[in-house]
Image (cartoon, rainbow over all chains, first blue to last red; front, side, top):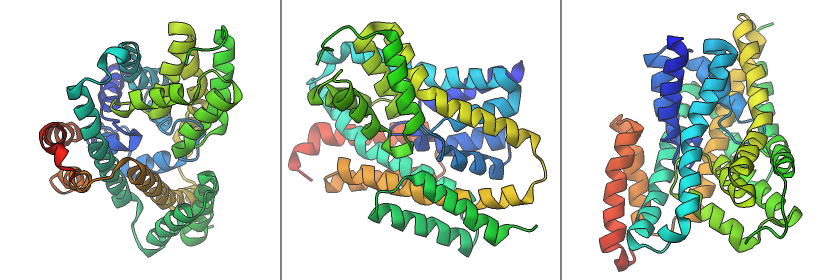
Length: 175
Length: 184
């Protein structure tokens, strides 16, 4: 029960940091789930987060797997509601008030200012994630190759995630 | 902007379920536009751009926030709930299954090896998505300064995300409110 309420608190808090995308919350996601609460290890978090990139739909569904690993189905549901409830309520409210907010100078300034900050937060999340995922020259090569292919061609990223899996098995697998 | 006819909660759920099952990661906004504007004609281009603009300065995933806003405009609160449930269900079930399997399996060296290869692929993917987003939404020198400042605060100074967000955010708001007219 205490685990479930801790899950609710942590993921409710994290949801408010996802400005621009889920990756913005990654540094705090790692600190809270791995270091503070010990719900999973750093390699486990990195694994689930990357498998989540191959999951269909919005790209933070991996939080559900942390919920189920920590507290079963109740954990999964609580994590989902805590993570999507507050931000949904906020967008719903702003959506209803939009005609009154749009065009106000202070509101436009906030919107304009948050564009670079949110990109910065996403990049910082990428770098934190990369520190755990890129551990040697093989993993560095996989990261660079995936990046270069995606910048040059539009290809379903799920294929590249699968290619990464095959490369991992060949490089690190012992049968 | 308003829907041309009454749309049922069931239709909303099914449309978003399909998006949730077929879209991937960074491209989900394109799938949303395709479904809501081109296929169902529930929104015109300006209407969809407005939904996108509303989500710009808000926390939360773009995909789920657009689902909430679109569902609400189509059918009020029940529409919003149907939309977010639909778009999240396939991925949530997928990751639920992964979580259950991951908890059960302890010693599977080949799976661990595969996942050690998936993680750096995800790094490349996330970086490409972020740079693409940055290229489209940033235009000035000041933008680049605030991006770098935010990254340094989180990665070098180890600030918690909300501290960096409020700190650099306040600075950027002040800049764009008072000095922004200098076109830098």
